[in-house]
Picture (cartoon, rainbow, N blue to C red):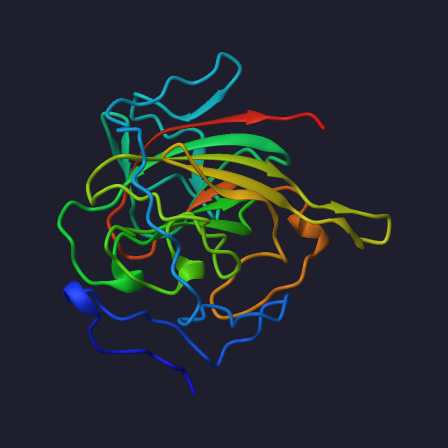
Length: 254
């Protein structure tokens, strides 16, 4: 039976929300989305993100200052249907993905959750950045919003919470800077090296060279397969309005 912890904490915060009927994570310490897992400490970031961060000279601009979405398509290959105005992309129906596929890269993403707060836990500003289309770095309004820790903003969704909660206020622009190494497979499609990620949230280190256990998923643990060796960058529609701007990527040689 699912465990949903209800009630109120001090200062009007909602109680943690999570599950006890999900699989144990591979390290055997916690259930996937375990609501009893310790919450990440809160750290106020030093950056304001008032202006888009300039991209390096060798970066590929995936979302710039124009409304051209030529780098993007829907997951079924149809033209992108999300709207962009003044270089700011608004989440729409369905998942958006890049036309190009990648392996190892440095990725910069700027996003903002809604200024008006509606709902709590996973219903506040929920979206996600999917690396290779398989490995999610969670996007969420985690400012004064308690949820299961492996679903907080900047979590490796369903696997590792961020080291700290470095979220800015709702409506304010935030940044993810991500260094990613794709998984490697042998001749028989056997996993030789897992995917590795390092993430900075608003300039604060929140994932430090962590290995994914496999593709991320809700309430489950998935195995690696050879089709995770490369893939697109994807942005998730989770029914919440989230804005994106200034997305760029640098493909890396290993």
